[in-house]
Length: 475
Length: 161
Image (cartoon, rainbow over all chains, first blue to last red):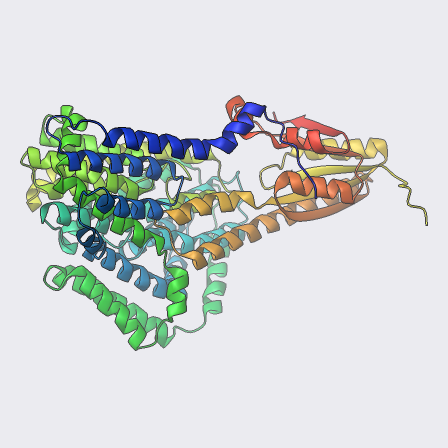
């Protein structure tokens, strides 16, 4: 067996080996110290312990030393063990409506992917977008954006990747050299990212935010209400995003005929539009209609689970496919995050933390919105957006209550920007997938990404100021 | 049968992230000058997509199956590119009258290189050193330094411009 000698300095090697145990020991020590402090003014003993749990989760979510879902489970266990809340109550929060809505949405998306319906739709739409490089680019940008309104943006990005790759190869575009290739992959990624914030279906972060809102305040945002507030922002961002891509990357081809040929071939390969696909599409459309029109009355989770049941009644999907296509860990993460949020709210720890930290700078409701949306859009470049929701929501809701603000506003101000990560491959799966194509370098991503991040923040806050008062969400 | 090597063997090392044309030219020129056989190794570095997707699997990414399918698609693409690059180099080498053999292997970069150096009884390895920050090199190590320290033959490093 070969032994490969590590040539780094010894202390660097020791650090790379020892950092994990050191981090856990250090974290344990910090936790122990916090919970044994004398509670400061305005904070109960239960609140102090909850802050300790929150600090542990914050550290683990940010560093990713253990999977996000395990951190959340840890929170669920620590809360009753520390006497913060009864086990029964904590575990009942796991069965939150948001968790079951996410589960249903994941399974519906799994059915779309497994049946090939989403790929077929992509191929059909893109085939019609040929003709000129700009039209094709627009198709590669807008179709994933539209699909991300209705299913997980990450699933859409994964589905689009082989199609965009085939297009790039058919057009003879050179990796790292072709501006048009770079624009194709980035357009696909940005379409998913921007489209994914439009509804509750594009990313599980939005239902998580609603779940925390409901548990903390009893308030709710329904499917249609979210769309009315966010879709106009999304449309503006899509328009600006396209202009940025067009201006940033030169179009170095003229004819996209070969792309049309490859799309036709892939479409032929899929075969005829099956009854399976039609029925899955039909159930998906019905679910969306019911979510929009009857979501408040019937409950989002109830509609989702009924739609899922229909998939099995008509044998449109097997349980094995569901197991393989759904990321189960994220359900654990969300259950735990909601439980932690509830503990922070009920013990007053969120209010205390809000006043002790961000509260000093948030001197008005609009300042609060500006601050939290900025934090959300910055942090999401380096962290899971679910972790951002879990961290910022309790503090944001508490501060908004102090200012007499509608908590729905701060919820949307945190949740929506948390999905807009453009700059780094680690920021979001859509970008990671595009980057792994090998068609562009980091610098091709970072600079337009920063531009888009800043523009997104500005547009979002302008819309809050100008448009949201018209729909009953005045700040 | 004689087990003595008749000819010097030079190995040019390339990978998914190391494809410097300057290094390719240097390897061909050196092989021609030394009348050596040129073995071109392309390492399809498995660390790259798994690094990205292992992290993504922890977020609200999709399930195992689509993640696996995506990783496979990306690895396949890297392999295709590797093969295309090797064909190009082989043609170039043959045009210069250099005997050339090409290999594509998947796996961890340094381990794979050392394995191939041993298998082909390489006399000289030629590779490029990528431009990186000193901090990154200090903390994450350098594949070039690792290979140089562990290879049983000299390693010629071509600095990236």
